[in-house]
Length: 222
Image (cartoon, rainbow, N blue to C red; front, side, top):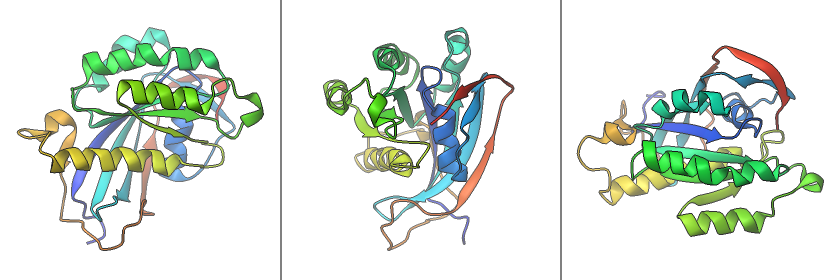
């Protein structure tokens, strides 16, 4: 059955404003890019099914949260019951990298101890404007036990891979027995079928939908 999947994972995308969070979601779910994108108020939502390295099909339910400080108290409620968080900064704006510590503290405080965190340096297509070296992102991730990847929502570079490595990490935690008991508290639900396949592709091409909250003011997105 084409719609069968082994698990449903809840993911969140967090980080400072204008780092390209919504563009990453749009690129992943719809494979398209908007040069300008209104700042998110509240959350945006999207889904996509992928095939993990072990051959299991996994459906991702992805919540993109607003980055403005005024919405932090609202969006923190989405941290609870998240299997993974993609923590995004803009490699061309050092201040967004400096903000990563605060966002990570929120994950530690409001998500579960087993939430997988992927540190994502976005806008790698703007290499000539880079303010944060790749080595800095790698070092931060290594020191805090995070996964790390650089992406470009504009070109699509590594976008699917960012979500895939998070899904693979969650599956590994299931195998290790770290999500025992009521897995829904960890953002994991048993899916509609075995969803297994012998083809070890990273991403399956079935796409879902993206819905938006009310939004305001435009920003460059890539």
